Length: 137
Image (cartoon, rainbow, N blue to C red):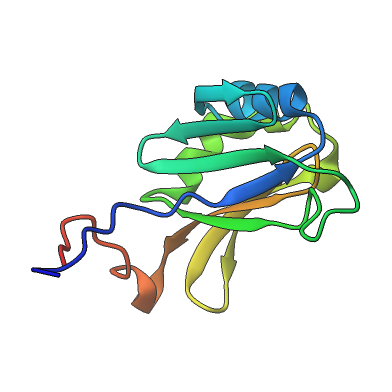
């Protein structure tokens, strides 16, 4: 194999019970674009973040609702502000506003209709430079 392999990005699978409900949530609440909707499989993307949604039975080895994905953002407060009006329409146990964490992240989280946890975070303090999109290699 010549040269380095070209990693592009990670696209986690999220198990869902009802594809149309999940697609509506990711599209209408979180602003993702649906690129593929093929029965029990869908691919959604927003900017450089993608997820693969897979319709699964509750009894599956990795059942719907057991996934957790972390999305690094440049401005957690600004990102939350863009979502806040839509999040307020969800039950209060399905989201939380931004908070500074002791491990140097400012984060907020959202649970999809199946309970999959999506955390949005930004490095703060000594962690502020942890994510630099100009970094290559």
